[in-house]
Image (cartoon, rainbow, N blue to C red; front, side, top):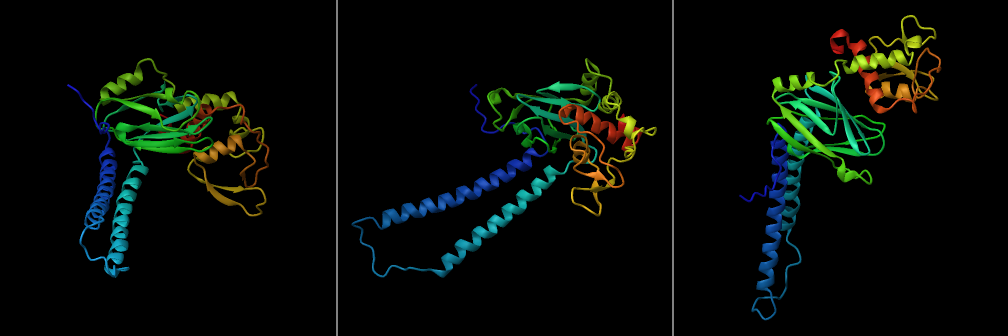
Length: 319
């Protein structure tokens, strides 16, 4: 039987909210479109040439109509704003227990890294009924992670982390697109999201994947780069210790500062400290660290961040 769906399937908890905002906006648009067109046709017929109507002393103002034409659309706009903003904040703030997957966009593919160590390209496997948060960055140009069935879309920016979260509600396979033109093969930058039953997902993680978690991979990279020579307990060069630093407030000096100010030691801070170590210098330390800008890719940076986060939050976070 011929089937032509007007909208993608709804497969996440936020899809219904997004569609509700969309239909409310469309209802307002159609109402005013119908009102204006009906008045246009009415006046066109009534005042066409040759009709016997009173055309003397036409009114040039009507205070009631002018006030209504300003106040009513204003009230409708405010209500739509409140509705859309409330939905936006619900979709923007991920639950605290969300399952975190790292995403790197590059021409022309998405690479996705699970905390358990499994890596995917242009595919994402997730369990049903569990909030999933994507922590994303681009390695080259602007990309956009778009899953129509989840009603979620977020740009991946070079040099800046962005986040996106969803909670799948239906088992199945759903389209994944890059929704930002990124070059010659942009149209080929597509893939699939697979929503699985929790038991099936656990089996998928164990088959053909790495047993080394993302934090453990970061620890191996940390040691291979001899970072512990400066940041370890038996440091050869005086540098800040990293145990417990993630999530804390760090006193830093920027160029021209005489008094340190505090910044949060989050993903942005750690990434900048590796690539631009002289941008924010920890108070009390010399700017001796070299830049790793051309030596580490975004995938490696995410591994290092996962490791530093694990030693900051304790052994429980490293699992």
